[in-house]
Amino acid sequence: MECYNCGIIIGHEKICPNCGTDLRIYRKFVGISNYLYNQALAKANTRDLSGAIADLRLSLQYNKVNTNARNLLGLIYYEMGEGVAAVREWLISKGYQAEENRASYYLEKTKKDPAEKEKINQLARKYNQVITYCRQGSVDLAVIQLKKILATNAKFVKGWQLLALLYINYGELEQARKALRKAEAIDTGNPTTARYLKEVTELVRQGGGKKTKKAQAIAYQNGNDTIIQPKFRGDIGFWGMAANLLVGVAIGVAITWYLVVPGVRKQAVSNASVAVTEANNTIADKNNTIKALEEQIDNLTGDVENAQTDMENRDAAIKASESLLMAYDAYVNENIELAGDTLEGIDETLLSKKGKEIFQTLREEVNHQYVTNAYADGMSAYNNNRNEEAIELLSKVVAADETYDDGNALYNLAQAYRKMEDWENALTSYSKVVSLFPGSRLAYNAGRYVTQIEQVLDNQQ
Amino acid sequence: MINFEEELKHFQPSDEIEDAEIAIYEHDITDMTDIMQQMMSELKRK
Image 1 (cartoon, rainbow over the protein chains, first blue to last red):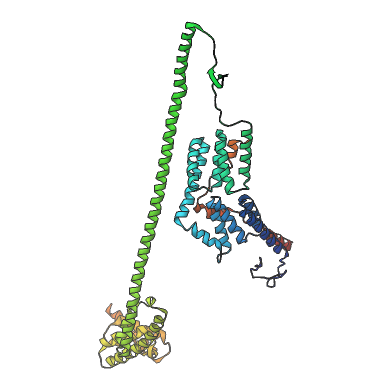
Image 2 (cartoon, each protein chain N blue to C red):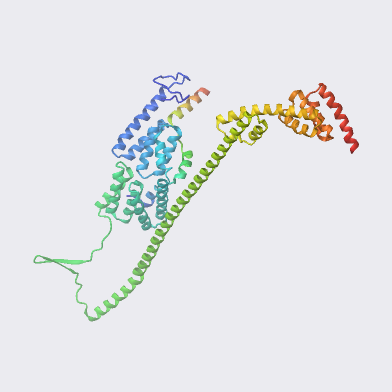
């Protein structure tokens, strides 16, 4: 058990040893929550799912982080065909306990399984369609749709109850009773099911249900046979019969016109509506299938692209490692320039952790060696009046370290520029010497050259 | 006697899975411990 205030694991202490919070009332709450969970578990085992739901909700009112209670609540919702409510509870459960939680498994099997997720969503969509039909007064369409839903989701308690309600409204009491028995088999303690069953029993007792009009007839015994014949209305004569015949024909025509024709039309419209509903459902199913397949294609395309990127990254990493080996080989063979150039071309991020360490060590060594060699060669070139070569080599030294040899590298680079009459670069380099080494001999000399060069540049203008 | 129209109002449209997460935020999941903590903090303030 955790302290609700600071979250540390505690044993049987009444006061939290960490933060000093009084835990007595909290322990009571947790105890009540666990007791209600146990009650719910017992009810769930006897399929009193509604009773179990009531206990679990109360249990969570006492302790919202009772993971077992919340997971069981989700499981019961799922058993009753309420997939969305189930997922909601498991998500909350996962939010409170991310690790070692059975809710992860449930979510894996529902929310993260595209087929199961689609099945749950389909059920919700079709059920919503039924509700719409009911509210529009298209009860026959609602019954057809509900039957379809229940054919594939036989444990959908709410569906059976709604079907029963529609049958009760129609007076189809036996059908209603059958639907309610199905609901009862899933959830024995459901109060709505019990109430509807009671209503059906009451209606049957009162002789309700579909009215069958029996023909008015006279029945009498002739020996062992029962003779049934229409009531005899007496002799009415020829004109009477003719009048009756005409009236009969007139009534027949009227019935045909006012009752049969609208009935046939209504039937045709109803059939057309059913066909349209069927077609819409088929289209919706197909669209969902297409959508699911498109998602699969997108996922697979993404996988292929990721695999290609991985492969390219691996190739680049192998190339970087090979370059590192080549740089090391050049360094060992004292070809410092080649080693430096090779190291420059390596993307450090592609190397492994060990590779990066080797790269950094080698780069430091090579840089040091490279700068030393470049400085020696640059100074040799400068002293032998090969100013162009001196500029190239000393520039590399200064690029690596502007203060190299206490500023002599930068100063001699400026000198080489001046001798080549590259006044702009000479002025820049001398100015850097002045700013980097103030008060030194080099800065004093550089300052004098700065003044001279500025005069030269002014004269040129 | 069951009133069909009234009874029908109890059958509400259901959410889809995508809406379940949104519904969680609209859910009040305060428990007794939360209420107790709130009461204790109010007592301390006084």
